[in-house]
Image (cartoon, rainbow, N blue to C red):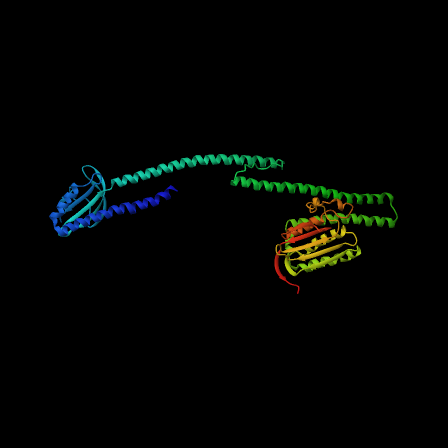
Length: 439
């Protein structure tokens, strides 16, 4: 950095200071030449003698007027300097004056009558200033280097302290203490921002681990019940050996228990495929309104059987890019939930629309009992079953699947009170391909 600072100064020194000094010597040589041309050699000698005697102290100038044989005619130099060419021009050399080496710069000019004129100046004072500049620059560089080393040691010490704290926290987490977090000092620096980001990541990891534990416990509980019932029935058949008709009835019941177990595993496998993005391979262009309408038609007979009015409406026809099978299954889960808790003489409304603030919104609303506000944030958790679902068939994976499908399409599943009833809206942000009015 200091070198970059010094380089233009050095350049300016040579280009401005030395060039200015050389220009003044040229002007002096031109004035002396004019004296010779106007008043002759005697006047020139007199002017040179006057200039030499009147030379100010501290400004050592050199003037030498020589004849055609370079013999001294006038001036304050004893003889023509050795090694100096007789050609006109600018020269830098060191003069040996009374056992004193003087760095100098000269302008040589050829005058009429065969005379040669040397006008020069001692440049040692400029060298002194230049030397002082470099000495000062090196001193500043040394100071900066010392400060940099000292500052680097302080920064290293602070960073090592931060790394030590991080290492202790990570070691505690590896040992199994998932509640440990990186220390925060409320400082607006990069390390504190990194600590906050890592802490949020650790919060998410802890949440996921607890969720996995809860899911494992729920799976064990939900599988134990049908498997226990299945074993009891089979054991009773072995012990009692009932009639053929009763045996087939028990076998049918056992098959139902096995189907419950298979349904749980199928739902978990579908959720796993959605979570790891494997189902993105099934993304195609499809008509959203057609998919939703087909799902509604599939549940229409069951709704009529329960005396429920199931209606569907779409504001416009629009195509989207996504997985139509998963979308149909998610909509079917929402309708199935509404029918499951519905009483007679209620309405279930399904709407599909393309809104301005979101790409696609599919809403299933009903006049049923709804979901308490305290449970709306939990119903999408796997195997969660609220108080209203006690005694009803299911394992608590339906809404989890709907939320996963929404997430796969870049959206969310949101619940709202329909006053009365519940309104469940599946928001999606797929790549919208086209939007054309029905009419």
